[in-house]
Image (cartoon, rainbow, N blue to C red; front, side, top):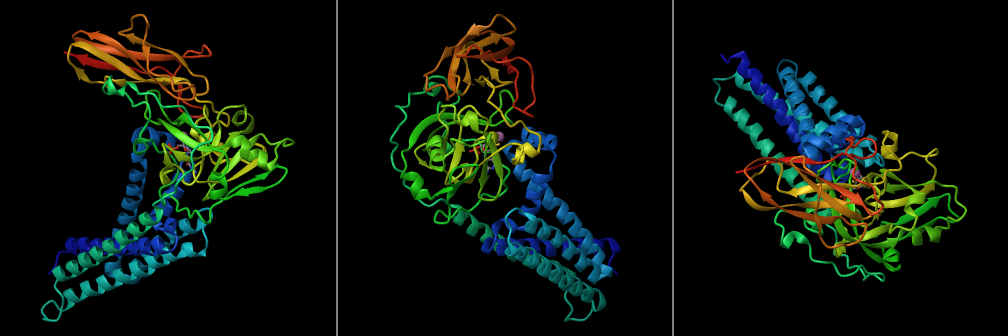
Length: 508
Ligand SMILES: Nc1nc2c(c(=O)[nH]1)N[C@H]1C(S)=C(S)[C@@H](COP(=O)(O)O)O[C@H]1N2
Ligand SMILES: [Mo]
């Protein structure tokens, strides 16, 4: 006689195997139809949108760019737990167990269909999950029952055989899912787009301090190291032939541009530092790149905005995500642009291919719309963007800040000649000076690295004769307009963090 706990465990496993097969098949079907409709992604994306702002802030702060992996992992964990329960139920009541899996699949299907812009095809992956999951569960339970009933008969499968059958199915399903993932990734690869040269190029780029100050942030962030922050779990696929950028709303005439039409316009090239509002003081969500794009003013002039009563540009991405930008700030003479190039290449998909907005001096969440496809001139009263609905600020200039890159916080250093160094930024204002405080003594002025322009961060360093003991290092920046980096601590919500970074290092 088999012990009931063993049978229960085996059936829990059947539930898990059946669900894995369902999820995997759905992933494959999604890859062939609507990638975003893959149930786990769909549920995950819905969770992202429903998550209250403080929780989201916590997740970005604590998990950083791993937040997406943690979220998807949690969704999968919960689903598999429910799947195990369904399997256990199915031992005595197979139909109830199978129906439970169908209900589970329906949640994923509902999430997929409810995503913005989802068409009827978004149903397909969920249906595939329901049919295959329920089917596999019923099959495994039947197989399992036969082992019990006719254990002695030679034609009856062994219990091990049933488990092996399940494992085999799971392996095949994993292979199918991996195939689907491969298809999606291949489709996401940006075709080789050759961009024309800028008619208004940026000057030659100076050599940074990274050659002489080990550990300091490089003057220009390599594209592959550039921070990535967005609400997406899966990158969109953008077909360049189908893509266009439309300007509508309170304008004289609605206009649209194809990618070729954009690249045929006069292009400017600028070195600009982007910053995420979620960046804590001393944090990593800031990066500098050379952007190539069409001046925002040139594009809006084509639509005619002289008589507009709009106070915001509401940008919409290819999937309906919205970002608002204060119109007056964007057009006050700063180098706002619709960028199509980053560090000498087309934008990578992760950074907004084929086009995104860049406005020096505004946090990314109120300016840097990636995968942009529409700019609507409207008012904050009339229409609210994604983060506006979530109570974030609408007018959010980047706060002046500075960061210590070297030595690292809590580092162990050898006594002697060290260098304290990092970066400081005050986009659209410029960095006047950076000061360093060692062990609470008077602030000392640091040396500045090469000047790339006011919209770009500035490297800084201070040689330091370090003696044995624990030391506390702090830095603060002053802008060209006289503003000093504030010591008042603010959380990123609702308009960006402030405060002064202070780290401890041990010297021995
Ligand atoms: N479509 C879209 N654009 C977006 C976002 C987004 O979630 N969706 N996130 C914004 C935020 S919060 C920031 S900080 C910048 C980050 O740009 P990056 O990922 O290229 O560094 O993109 C902005 N553009
Ligand atoms: Mo951001």
